[in-house]
Image (cartoon, rainbow, N blue to C red; front, top):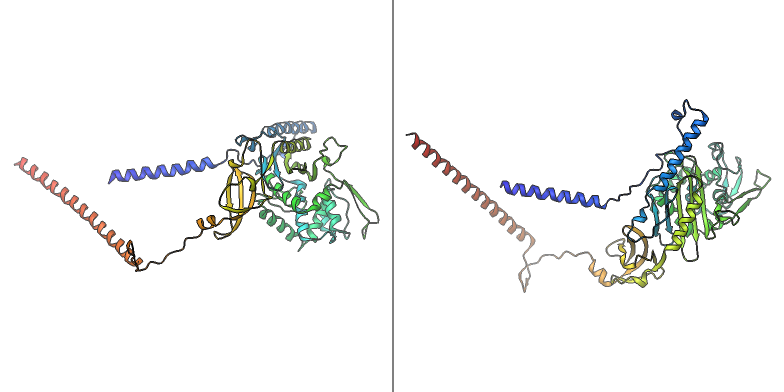
Length: 479
């Protein structure tokens, strides 16, 4: 009995340890880095007793160290087997996503929490376009202006002014006007609070699960944060579903005509430098984007590019120094140079699918084949005749396809129908009612327990007999 107990304990221990080891093996080594927890600017306590020159020197030293640390951060995608090695960047997070397939080509701390700054306005534009019309009236209220502080981007709107949503979106995406961002939320749908709730709900629907937004402009708040992956997913929806994003982004200069309260026009320019041919950061494939900067967020940037073959989305967060454009260009060139589309229908050999969307594709490097990918079927129910197949490589998403299932697949995955027991005689014998079977099982269990009790009783009886013999021997010796 004791040996059996010990063996059972050993078995359970091995089982538990095996599960723990397997769980640990599934955990990624490169855990997300929280970018909101570090800062370059000294706190008031750190500044106390120091001269301006000393403070400047300390902040410069902090920045130099942080810049180098950012450059040395691990690039997750470089750890994929046979994957093209992507460039190091001076940002603490970066992602390159193929817009139409959702394939992730480059990943560096893409789930790390960071402050978005004004790239928040990409989501603001998405909610506005999904819930409003370009000719809708946007009225500037006092609330749209009261929160502004010195240095915040704006275009000088005043209380009571009225513009169209089209004008407001140009001011939002080109000039990054913060009072206009507030006005868009205030005038769209059911008001500002409703708009913020929509921003968060819509983000979750798109798969942006690690973000939280508390305003429409991106001005710093510790409860207003996102990740590189989340911003890429949000940008993807705006970029692929709303042509207005590209149209506005490619407008290098825009004029808001005189309003009901302002007799003069307002003129402003696109702030994203990669659009200008005369600029050193010009990149010919750029088609849309949004800039961002606050002291806490540092440089953030969303850039969309199209080389005629692939459409890429690049998001960089918390970029140190003046590297936000050079990093973005390097990442986009890495994507265009190392990856290509592979049609799913032409390569999928599974007999589970009757039809496959002919326009669906995955994005692969030369060193990875379609056969290397892991498919995952997503359906609404086990009886659904259509579904989606997601393809991944070592846990990295590379595309998906809409499919219609074959009869063989539907039959194989059909829910099992419970067959009622009957008393009909078959070739194999008589099929008994369920209660009879349970009664038989109960009888067997009772007899088994009785057998164990009988064995135990025999064992006890034997022990007692042995003890009596020992006592009798001791008595004889005493005599």
